[in-house]
Length: 303
Image (cartoon, rainbow, N blue to C red):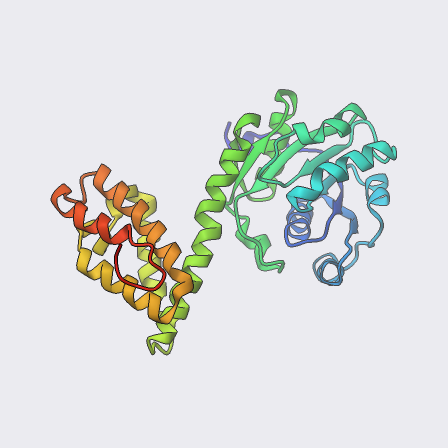
């Protein structure tokens, strides 16, 4: 269905339970679409400040009162806290029949909302596939952001319409595939941050004054090539089978940043396997390379 043909949800009173980085941004996006944030809950000082900054006219109240005031409730708490939160709200009778209950966890589908569904709530799982800063810039970044959407069949159009109103692109994820979907996103996004941070630290140790400026164009091109071409975009000494260069890398990392060696070896082994499987790494060069990558001697040298 064309986004312009999506049924528009009625104007809703929106509540946020958990004023972390995600909830206020989604509430602001819904506000721009014509919905009305009416209540927000937060515990930490950072959450309270964030709610006051991003939703300045919205009262800060306990979670049960958020549900009392809102037609659509965003449950934007950490994944591990979500099941107990839902069970607690259901047990205390805070949930109203017909209330839209939306969680933003990537890990869970709608089964985690079963206690609320039995209380009459309408369950939706809308996970924005984006990293959040907890600032106003997140609202703009939602434009074109993919959302992993899971909902009962009868609520699918409503779920997709809400995502489109927030500026996002709905992507349907089956209930049983949610953990795999979330693992894929974490593998790419979370580990990317770690790799980039390590790379900047190493460049600084090598005397580079502005590691971010050096890495920006390189990593931007690598990401673009990877998204376009997958494994065909692999370059560098591992894909070429330059065992001597890789051995020099490992030696230098052991001297200057031993904490990075395990990660370098693990990623290099995976890269070698993929390059070999896709015909980029010549088999006659792979043996020496894999010998270097089998080195796990923490004090240096090969085993």
